[in-house]
Length: 227
Image 1 (cartoon, helix red, strand yellow):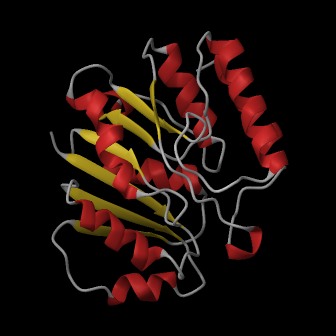
Image 2: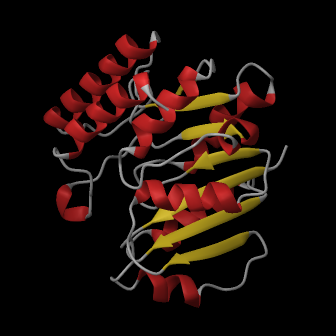
């Protein structure tokens, strides 16, 4: 099966070249799609200066639309059998790809999430970020009758046919609860595996804010009763 790695990217000039190199080193991707979401910090110039690679495709949004919009662009352009979402910072390690892909390759699942709370090595998180994450995951479990440990994880992996038919609408960080809600409502059980996590500090460019938590909660409630 061919793996499409989808990298939404916005203002990541310090890490974009490093994460691309890390993805290439694991030698599992059949294609790597970088969606630059209107970066203004020099990220575009770095991407344009990269040496040609037949596995790498770069798509440019003219202006910033949000992570969800960038991932949706990647889904539409991807040609693989498996889609894997990779953030453009260095919080998530592509060396975890084999454990993420194994349940799909063995036919045990069509959707796999990499959980930061199942015992993998991790840098300590901010306490209130952890509280928000656990609260949103708890709400997901109540509304959708599941037992996830990390709904907000970046590492989400899908068989292509799972997401190609989903009516995804979210443009920003509400993408995470939306796609989780719609996958679960369609009867797919999510397989979780432990991953490593190297969370970055606010001064290193971390973008998600506390104001995103109420939006995520509303998204979970909204899509429980609508599509």
